Image (cartoon, rainbow, N blue to C red; front, side, top):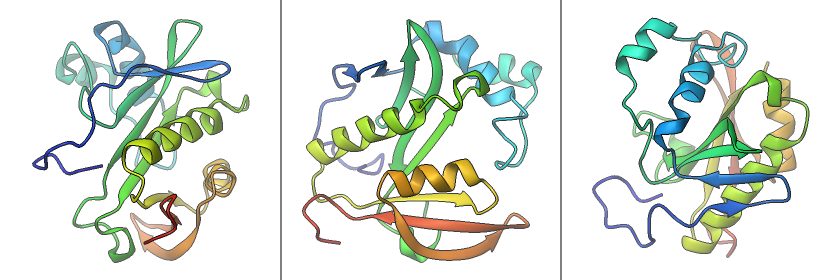
Length: 182
């Protein structure tokens, strides 16, 4: 994704992306409760440093959460079940990630085990390849997060490096751009 100061070469938000079972779309005010649930979930944040409190989230979250290019709500049957994030890897991130788009995802525990994350991430990556075909993508996860490691492999990420951060072993995967140039 272009950084926030760069001119975007694509329209945002895009038309909703539909898959066989899901809709990926820009966040809306009706998603606020879903964001609170997602960000306050101890299960969701097991490998992410822990959840935030509901009280803190209720005070801090804007009426329309996370409304910026690259933030998709994942909807199933009209309800938010997760979020996909496509954003430039922060400058403090690993050197192998510098200048690349970082894929992040969070799904509510009730959505786990149904293939929704794979379906939604694949759709988001396909969208990205359509608007920025030369864009490589990275994904970082704790090696202990076996579900995330399996998803990364399924999505075509290969190991770029392993490192230690936040008192845990981390894995950084790379998915080259569709053109094959890195």
